[in-house]
Length: 128
Image (cartoon, rainbow, N blue to C red; front, side, top):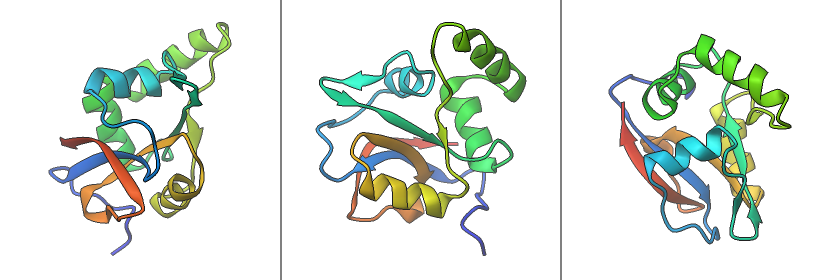
């Protein structure tokens, strides 16, 4: 089974590298980070990571955390572009996201809770 497949009822976690100074995030803080309304945590530049648009985990994340569907998100980023904001950095797979999270300070991503490792720090736990 590929780790790109996610059951919709599965728990997910928003994570960063294990040395992150962030202790936890609320759903509203996660939303602000992913909509690039919050780009720094103290002096740390945040790098929000996103999976490809058709990934089921991303679709569930956007629906439940961002409270937007794909069309709303596209409109949001068209408007935000003129304010100098760009969408989160897109990785090609959960595997890529895991590698990036473990190596790049300030990176934040969402993964199935079943893939959590000691190399990552949980900032938020949720369930779809």
